[in-house]
Structure formats: structure tokens, C-alpha cells
Length: 396
Image (cartoon, rainbow, N blue to C red; front, side):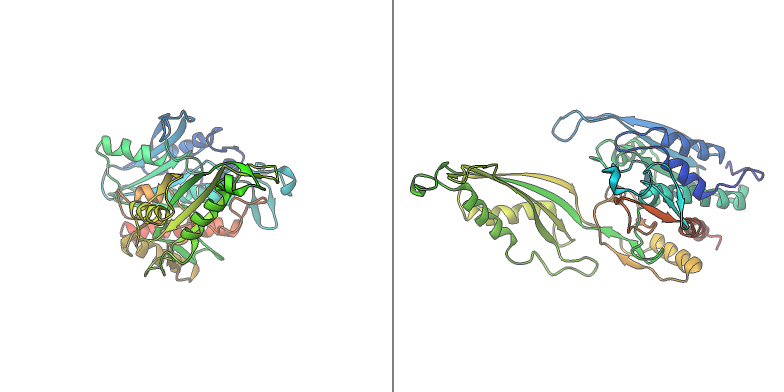
């Protein structure tokens, strides 16, 4: 086992986060962010694999090639994998920011910039924690630590984590447990761990009618009226009341498009898009059948296309969440809530391979202008990850 050299310069999670922020790695661009991660890990004795995938999208469309990184230190088991992403969402209009999004400024005890919270800060914190853990363990460490870092979490997620997991499976490499470093903390660092996520699916509904003059409605079939009726059938009443670990499922209409600039023309076509976030009472197949049954009552003249981003999943409390809970309590004194709230993450892919929990920084500024992370939180997150490693591998 190659551990960190005793005289190696200690990794400062703040400086490493700042270095990563300065790489404008908006999906699908990498801009050298993974080179920074790999350089630090190779110095600590990790073997790094750069993996580029360029498969087409789900409908055969061409999409951008994505750079990914898998790094491992050790060959034994258990293999604990930290998963994350260096890609970030676009910063948006510059007038929304009070500082340059990729300058990594320090202000009022915070490090500022796109990706500070989501999730370059967590990557830096874990690498700093791994360095300390390996230096303390030396040759007495029998397991493995690995990192799976993608550049496609904020994008279509076709050539990212899912492909790396397939690559690992093909080479016979097993993950035994995983932490995903998403910004799960809600108000203060350590108040929430994610042990599951709701599923997400999008429906695109098109209604065909007959265009006509508004003064002669008997000669037309108003597609807008029919669309309203269909949407009412889907949105009247709850899908469920929630389950032990999940909030109620929710169907939300996100857009209605008629495309009719005239006030005296009955539209012949109307479209709407809706998204369903669903708990473990449902699968995407069951929901598609539920929607079809309700729409069928209105006859034909409509068509529906589905896109499924992920199924709901729950990882019951166990060794990963238990170790995280203990580590958080040891560093912060807080007992985190075990939650399934929020959107999707790459944990939806990892949970099919090993137990996984998500834990990271406070997410209040993620995807917003003026994204920032408290310097103290980066230090504490590094300490929590180190305490987790100690407990997971049996030192604490």
C-alpha cells in the first residue's frame, strides 16, 4: 500500500478548492480540473485512470465526449469510494454576481465562486482527509480508498458515472461502499445525510385538435381546451401521502405551449411538459400506466413521450450512514437527519453497486449567483471525512 509520504506538504482544502474553482469546467468542458485532482492523488500514491466516453444519447443523438477519473489507493477490501463531479452549471448573467464566478475570491470568511459548494469543495475536503488518514495509517491500512470523479453530473449523465461503473464491472473491480459528496447539509454543516432519492420522470404531452375561427367554434376542436382537461385529470388530487422515508410524490406542470399569437384563432395543437418526483411507492412503469389510464378517459388525439432520469431508491440505515453519523457527531456535535429530499444525483447509479450515502456542504447557494462556502466548513468537512475513514476502516 502506497501511503502519503511523511514529509509531503499537507493539502489545504481551501487552496485546493480555489484551484478547482479557477477551472471553468461548465459541463461538458473539463478545462484541466481533473488534471488537478489526479496530480494530488498521484502524489498520495493513488493509481489514476483517465476515462473518456463519447457514446450517443438515449435517442441516438450525438453528445459531447466526457472526461472522467477513477483513482484507487490499495488493492484490498473493503473498497470505499468517494464519488463526485468537477463539472459545474453555467454562472448565468454576470450582473447577477458581485464577484467573478471563476476567480475564487475570499470574502468575509468564505471562498466564492461557481462550484465552491457543488461540489469542488467536497472533492478537495475528501482528498485532504485521505492524505491525513493515509499518513496516519501507513502500512497498517489493509483496505482501499478510491475516487470516482465525473465531468457529467450536471449534464445528461450519459457518459459519466454510469459509464465508469460499467467500466469497473467489466474489469472485475468492486465497490463495497460509497460516499457521494453532494451538498446535502440544509442549514448548517452536518444537519442532513441523504440515504435515498425520489425518482424523476418527465412527460411531454401533445394534443391535436382542429384549428378554426373563434367565431365558429363548432367548426373547430380547441386543442387548448382539451389539454387543460387532460392536465386537470393528472393534477387533481395527490399521488400519495408519502412513505416512512419519503415525502409525498408530486406531479408538477412545468410549461404549457400553444404558440398562437392570434386572438381570433382556435389553436389546433397544444403542448405541455410535466415532471413527476416519486417515492418508493412507485416505479416509472407504474406511473406511466397511471397517467395513461387517466388520459385514456378523454379519448384519442394526444400523444405522450417519456424521459426517465432515475428510479426512486432507499439505502436503509447501515454501516455507511452509521459511520457518517458518528463522524459528524464527533466533529460538530450534531446528529444529522437521514433524508431523501432534493433532486437526483449520481447516487442513483451507485446504489445498484454498493451501499451509498450522500454528505457534503451546506447547499443554500448551489446553482445560484454568488455561490460560496465558509472557510470553516471546508475545514470541518475535511475533519468529518477523516473521522469517517477512521471509523469505516476500524481505527476509531
